[in-house]
Length: 327
Ligand code: SAM
Ligand code: DTB
Ligand code: SF4
Image (tube, rainbow, N blue to C red; front, side, top):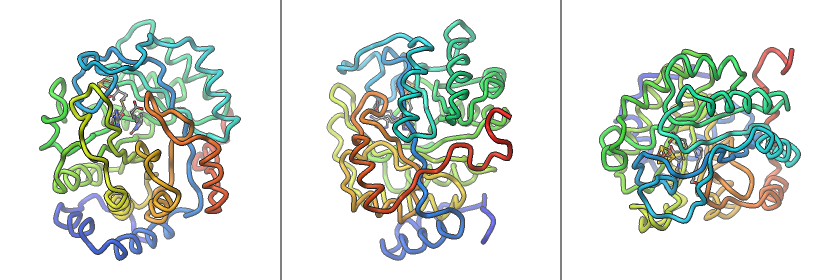
């Protein structure tokens, strides 16, 4: 088993991505088996704890206030409501609960205190707890760590070169700074991106290059296919072909062998065979439940049938932690 590398070049990554599909999947599957249990898949549930009305201009996002989409805008939920949904997620088989807020950044106010309470209470259910709240500074990341947060999601979304076409209200460097604050706090870093934004293959490689040159690699890497939403600038983008997802996942698996690679947004468009190829190529995490943040996702029953058919089993919560939860 070779140790993860942090010096992958763009040329090497491009050559992998463009190799014959079956060679690429075979190689990724081999590396996956050397580093992970290939039949174990992490099951995460997402909840939008604060929806819509966001000041940012992310071209893909239904929650940006400046686009006219039909999301139901909602202020920050109550702690009790969130805990109820988390308990249901646990009962339906999820081991990680991820809370998303349509914020540009975390502010040091009552809402942040409420989120810290949510983290503490969800953790007390023995679920892994993740949050995606926009940019955080070092003190905020430390406060989240102290409350018991397992992971923080903050995506690069695309390459540095393409970034300006997608978001103008903050910079690539801002994103990398947030990731560094999270890493310093000891909270696991979850960072990946979206394909189908109108980017080139070189942009995809650029994003994978930045992720794989982080040291350590992000603990988890979500690979999202754009969910085109009416009212957003990207509403007419063509659907991402499954082989593009498979190539992204396989390439990510080879260059970040120990990370959780998450087959994220876009599963509603994929059948069991297409998703099975993603798992073969190294995906080992999904979002479960019939809603992502605001858009549809496969039903829990459909995923249960897929797990049964493929003989997959869920990854236990806190598998790699040395101390049992609560000790
Ligand atoms: N506001 C915070 C932020 O931007 O970091 C957290 C929530 S934001 C919705 C989390 C991520 O969801 C984005 O970075 C993006 O990668 C993904 N996302 C949002 N809308 C999407 C869409 N229509 N299709 C696919 N992924 C999407
Ligand atoms: C990620 O990479 N994908 C998730 C999660 N991180 C927060 C979000 C996908 C959102 C898809 C659009 C929506 O449902 O609003
Ligand atoms: Fe706001 Fe996040 Fe959507 Fe961008 S992706 S508009 S920051 S909610």
